[in-house]
Amino acid sequence: MDLWQLIERDHENISQLIRDIPYGLNGRATARNRERMVDNLMDELEAHSEALDYSLYAHLRRHEQTAQLVKDLQRRPATFMKQLGALAKHRRKGSQGWLNDFEDATLLVDQYLDRHTRALVPHAHALLSSDELEGAKRAFVRSKVKTLKARRGVLGRMGTEQAWLIATVGAIAACLGFLAWRKGGLSGSGLPYLGTPKGRQFSGGAARTVSGGRPRRHLHDNPFSAMFQRVSAEPTRPMGATGAGTLCTFGLKNRSLRRDVLPVLEEANRGWLKHGYQIYLKDKTLTESRDAEADRPALVFQIAGATLPRDLVSAQTFGFCFETNKGGDEASFTVRDPHSTGGAPWTGPQLDASDGCEPSVEQLHRILEYALRLALTKPV
Image 1 (cartoon, helix red, strand yellow):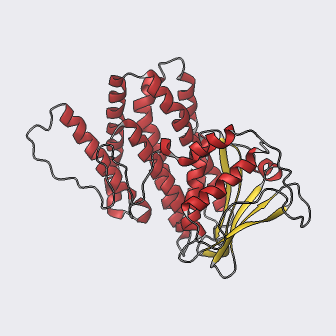
Image 2 (cartoon, rainbow, N blue to C red; image 1 turned 135 degrees about the horizontal axis):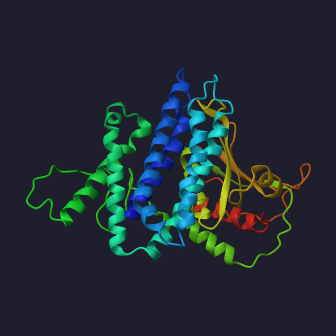
């Protein structure tokens, strides 16, 4: 496992914690649950920042091209860590408003991690020698192991939101073993077998998989990044799109927006962030208290340049929505022009998608490509 894979694994772990936290906002112990879960997220962010500080930052701060970038990345965590710390101590009864503040804080986290992917890693590739990268990997691993040793009591209290920790321990232990082997430190020694969890493969060059056999892509393999490059290179043609309307419907037998559509939106967001665009999402799949599924789950979103004020995005860009019907067996995808009034029908291009069928990955990709193409006709 190379340094880039270790960094990517940290990013995936942090993103998984962010996705899992809303599920913990239920029951009598809501405040205690979210305090513990946000503390876990803060621990991982702190460990990741420290590992980068001891590894890549230590080398890149000496280069003129990257000295300012390193300073900026070292300063950024202070803002979202302060916000997350306040959320962990939030004692008001219920969860009204808490999730909105959490989404604001974790948007900053997403931007921070994306800065690593789009700026830090490419500079490290270009500026550091193979020996420097090898040394940075060893420093990164040592820092992570030091953190894990300091948290040895965590494993005994591990909850569902911490299940990923086992994989991290195994990966880092394997990486340490590899480094020691290269130095001859394990010659002839009998080590216990470190098996990988069922459903995962980490053999050299093989595609990693998660439970169920679904491929787990690297950040640079994100299909939505290629989609953005292709769509943005097309000549922009005025569409004269106004009004609002339903573009397609699909069945939800044994499916749900939260389980099957939300992960695709998250992958699209990661791919488009690499090109300076993002998805501004309102997750309405759970009730306000986050303890049950909403009566009519919905995912409302817009696509625009990254880090813009939400009110500006809402007022100037097309709005899209996946929404479940009252029976829960069907969902629709709708679009709305922000400048339309009343019940004006949609006058824009229609979506080439099959009505009535269950939402396949290919269909969701076509829907999001349509939304992206439309959003790029009205850049903000």
